[in-house]
Image 1 (tube, rainbow, N blue to C red):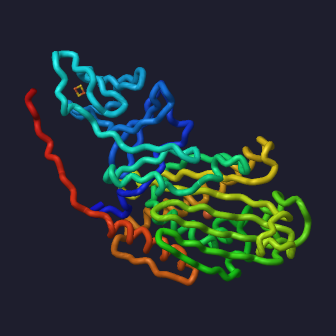
Image 2: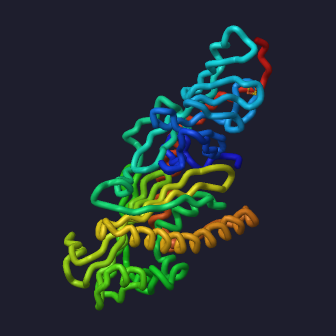
Image 3: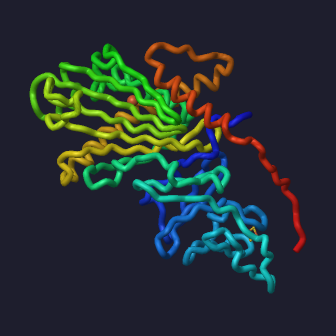
Length: 355
Ligand code: FES
Ligand SMILES: [Fe+2]
């Protein structure tokens, strides 16, 4: 890519909490950079650049022991801060011998990484995905390696009329495409609200509600730039006040999505589905997760085919319809973040330094 289509000064999810281990390294490419992730003996998590200071061999090829990595090539050892703490063939350690370490914060079951300027890594900017580990909610999710740009995935989520056509047998029905919606936005956020009142429930939601008759259905899409979308979705028995705030006669889920640019037009798609009822039913958690996994596989097909078509037709442009209003605002928020970044880079030429 000639220019980045994402801001660097942002928190992106590097991994689920369960993917980080004390005895094994996880490698990921994030914002075009290879990183190696692991846990220290005290359980805290670490992200280092996956390239040895000496000759750039990936540290992930080495061995992890007690929170330090020994390079596979010449045995230099780096601690969790990225500092070299052992050089086998030298009495003294060059004080400049270190690899870059990245700010990494675990919150709401995700390990968030900051690939931009470290002094700007404010934890208060981590997107709110508290449904993932709040005691009022339960759920589970996964991660998808998406061969498409995260922007296409955001477009997809900001316009849920696609459910009518991509997911007709589960969550889609004509009511979505027919229902009006409103779009509001603030600094880094865009909200799209759609209510479908007195409709036949789609199959998935009808089964969740477990009651016959018409429903009021809501889809409230909360986007936070650059790449997080929390969908507040559910149905309630028609006319029981859900729209006014009383959801007691309904079932509510939050579908969480957050995307991490990897390399080229590829991304990591972290997702989960949470609910606030039947909290103790592990079976329901598994059923929801598997149902959503199948639904997202349908989106994946579309997005990857779309990306391929874009790559094959670089001169073609997109056209916007009314349904694209939410996505257009989301793209604008992303662009504002990219514009706001300072692009000054200090490219370090590869050179050999004698010790
Ligand atoms: S390349 Fe890592 S120690 Fe030489
Ligand atoms: Fe979808």
